[in-house]
Image (cartoon, rainbow, N blue to C red; front, top):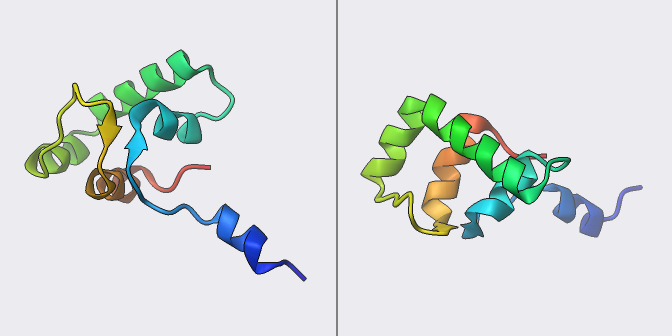
Length: 81
């Protein structure tokens, strides 16, 4: 039987993330720099997501992603892992 603690660890919970931290969740086998670069490429290619993020007040120069922005990203890219 799987304990509730293990199940809770496996569930992705949207919260405020540093951009590089969320990028590492999407690219766990990449370096921090490579994961961030790939994450930015995904952003550039997903125009619908970018439009929604910009409408929510996304600032590309901010180091953190707000919970609401993370929810938009997950809506378009799926949950990391």
